Each structure stands twice: as structure tokens, then as C-alpha cells.
Amino acid sequence: MFGLSKEEIMLMLEKVGIEEKQKNAIADILHLNNARIEQQLAFIIHLVIDERERSISNNTYLN
Image (tube, rainbow, N blue to C red; front, side, top):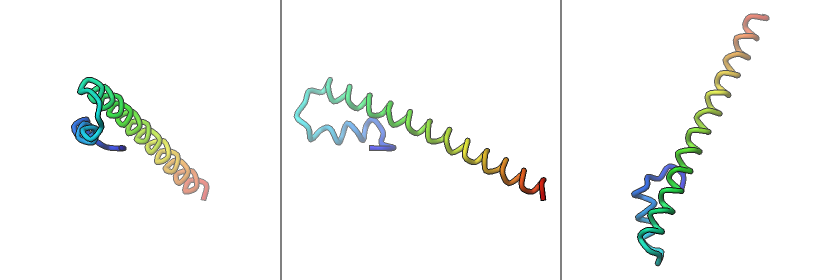
């Protein structure tokens, strides 16, 4: 369910026989978790890129 909007999650939950409040709560939780995961992935990607640039810079400087 990575990258889905709350509306998309709600549409998927339409097939499940639960109350609207429960669907809304589940969609909120999944959407917030997705946003948190996306933020963490972005942070990790930036760390990897920074480390790679540092490594390239150090190798260039040492050679």
C-alpha cells in the first residue's frame, strides 16, 4: 500500500464489511504510516548520496 492516498485506501476498504468510522481510522493510520516511510526513505537516500559524494571527493583528493 506504499504511496497510496487516503482516498485510494478508502476505495480499497470499500470491499471490506466494516463501519465507515473504522474505514476512516484505518485509512488515516495507513496513510500516515506511508508518509512516515516515505520521509524515512528520503532521509536514507540523502544520507547515502552524501556519503557517496564524500567518498568520491576523498578519493579524488587523495589521488
